[in-house]
Length: 251
Image (cartoon, rainbow, N blue to C red; front, top):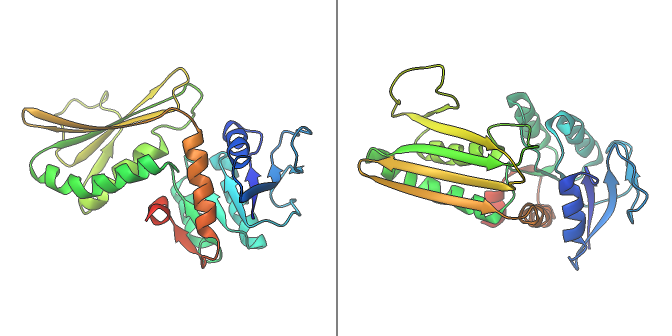
């Protein structure tokens, strides 16, 4: 039985994870961490991961970037594998992730869904061919009105996949309103839309001469992210300390 601690158990994703794990025969939640107490849960809830004294096989974190450094340090101290799904991380925090991965097995991804990570794999394969043929790359992401970071971590994940395949030759452009000039062939444009209750929609557009190719991914429920995170937690069992991504998880 895989024993999991949910960091942010009373948040939107924490609730979804709790529901999805309840349907898993070989996974159980043994503790939660959240600033908001909730006596209705079937497991103890602590106000910080450092204070949690329950033994577990993995921590799953879907919270906010402000909490990430403390989560990394607590997992390092307790030697617990970590699935880090929080977005909006700074370069310094990503460096902290890499340091922590020297001591614990850790999966970090800006999107836990199988579909998005498969799309990233496809982008690595087709981007060099289309870029060589003169296609421009644009990414448009849409999320609910409550999302605070922009662009989304998923948009950056997709942009990074394409750019990696192009030998990191491209730079990212997030706003063209202040610059009046034609498009640079070595740029990837990333646009963010916020509104309503959109779970997540990402379009990757390859615009060429007289033709356009569009790749689209739509998430209709947060459950797809929860299922991916659970798969990642299972993947980390018996793994040596190291930095892993969902690409490693899906193979």
